[in-house]
Image (tube, rainbow, N blue to C red; front, side, top):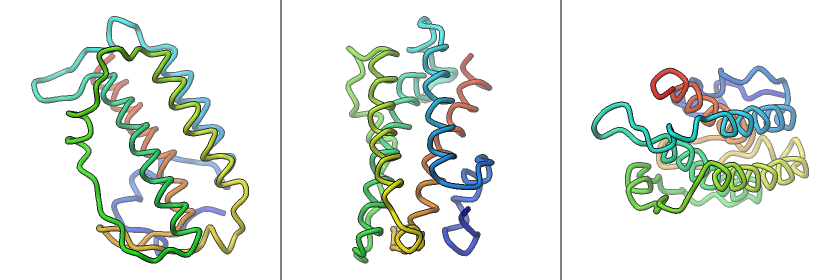
Length: 168
């Protein structure tokens, strides 16, 4: 089952539409391998590259994918458990500016993404259809758990596409 437009805020569509799989577990697994393969293939001399002043480095973009994966999966967990408190947004630029990536390399980023995504695959595997359809309030609007899962995949894919187009 895929999310419907009514299941999420309009902003999510640009990410969800990047994912062709018809069910969340297939989507998470396929995207997991795609992202890991991509990180492994990044030329090491490009990890600290940024294409323009004020733009993030490749390492920062990958770290942003991981940060967002953690935040959105936390939201999915809360909504799946029936927590209806409105959740605040997060400032991705603040997170990027405060992430110390000095001693981080591609292998660490790949391992971290792998760990976080595997954890999320396990979480989504145990959710029932009822739980996947539960909605919660984010600062930007209402979204269901299934849409958050697809967002994880589409958001990661979006940023990989950006790296391919502008950094490599």
